[in-house]
Length: 138
Length: 143
Image (cartoon, rainbow over all chains, first blue to last red; front, side, top):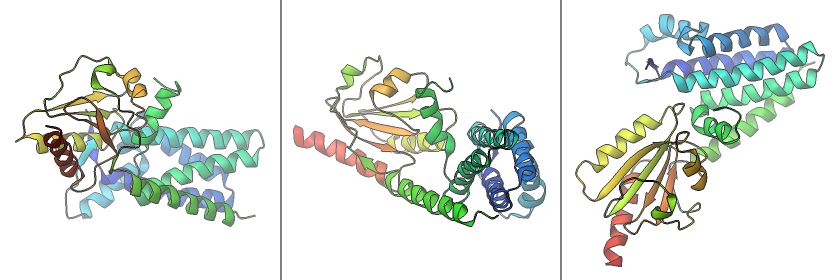
């Protein structure tokens, strides 16, 4: 099983938080499209392959003194999937001319990124089983 | 048009959720205890003579492997305590029966097979030790 530095996803969540704040503040659909692309890469190729993962690995990690703990890649990948779903819903809102849907979806993604970045919230721990129990996913 | 109020509301609500989870997760709670007997769970796994611990995990739980390691380390020099790690998706009906909604959820059964309580999330410092002490002490009192 692929293992990644636990600090990488939290770093990514912090950048995501800033990007989403800008998306809402400036009502920026192109910026949400960019963030959704980042989530898509994180979901399908792995969070370590996303642009934020690349920045962490190549620019941030070499400057950190301690070597971080490793974790299974799947939990942060699940968080990327949740972000990707919110991002897609937000972009559907733009496509159908519904600014409310765009804002609500982005606000949920912002809340998830905030919890991840500030409280180290594990989205997979709290939500995956609920999704399975609700038969939303296997 | 900016959405300063929306951003502020999201941050306030998220902070509330974060603080709530921080304060409630990792502590022993008996809120969910239905005084269910281990034998009523309908699973074929070994029960400890002193206590039985079930840890529910999922493959998307980042903290589960660390918690598992912590429990195994703690049980290294003990006897009579059976510990089992179960995948909540694989054992979905059992997880539902036990009202397990997130991972990790660690459920403690006493020597009689009754649920004594559970810890949801990563246990806070000394919470595991205190819980095990509590359960094994209870057994001595019962005797």
